[in-house]
Image (tube, rainbow, N blue to C red; front, side, top):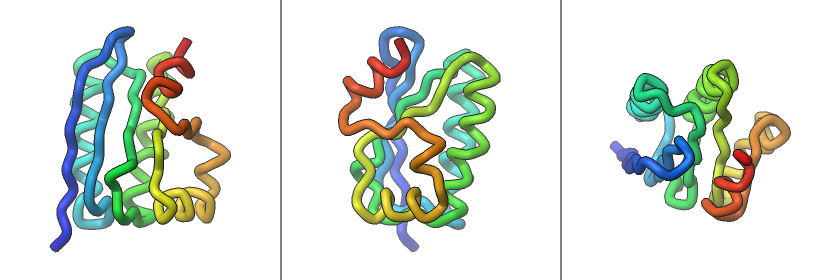
Length: 115
């Protein structure tokens, strides 16, 4: 079964960088959901998600971002997606998520979007 890798780093300005790799689907989305909840529990609501290493995302995987976005915005933050692969971008476009989320080409651009 394909795996999901999650690497979380605290950044300046009360932001967290979440680097994902592998497959984000019905088998792995709960891992990401728990990780994002842990970030919220630590008091951080500005989350940058680097999608460059994600090979595949399902609607279940994308659903994690939808639920998390509402919670981040309630807490005065946001979720910014960075550098999605072509496959991931296509799923986001099909689901209409490209209109809802801020999507940037680099982590630096994502950090600037919080200002």
